[in-house]
Amino acid sequence: MGRATQAAMELMGIHVMRVRRPEDAQEVVSAALDGAFMAGARIAVLIGQDVIGRKKWERK
Image (cartoon, rainbow, N blue to C red; front, side):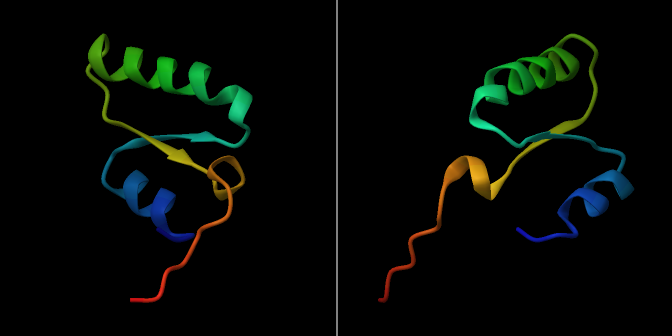
């Protein structure tokens, strides 16, 4: 997505939460779900490249 993603979402009034380590994913996503569905907040969860691993590019 890019470095400006968080700032762009925040300009739209979306609260951004980040997952920076795999072991934090469950806690962060759970908190985001609570905020979105219990509190009605607009929330995005950004998952860092370190968590999802290296991208694999394929030639077409």
